[in-house]
Image 1 (spheres, rainbow, N blue to C red):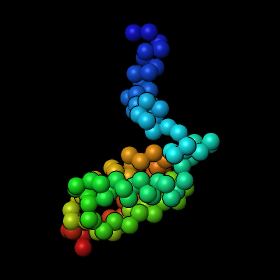
Image 2: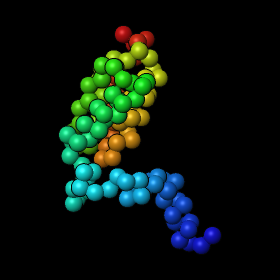
Image 3: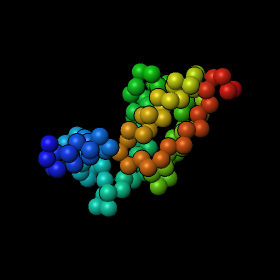
Image 4: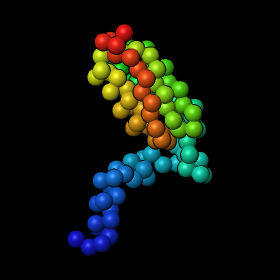
Amino acid sequence: MNENELYHQVYRRWYGTPRYRAGLYGPDYENAAGIRNDNDIKRDIDDGLSGSNDTKGLSVEVHVEEGVVILRGSVPDIEHKRLAGEIAWKVCGVVDVVNELLSGAAE
């Protein structure tokens, strides 16, 4: 394995598939500085939560400020809390997720 192949293998392990290969590159996803609009991030998270069979219909409030996502509301159990956090993390432009969802056991 040469140095170039090793670099790409490590890059993919840390950062995943490059955005241009995953179809996530262009004016819809980022501006010239590489930072997405908070409203676009919120829309994508809302779409992800409503599009997942596991999280559809949950009362989750999504707030985004400068790429930091705050999830608030209540969910039936800890697994749904984890899934909502994972969906938020997968959205391009998210820099941090604060998961303040309350599970059924905490209420």
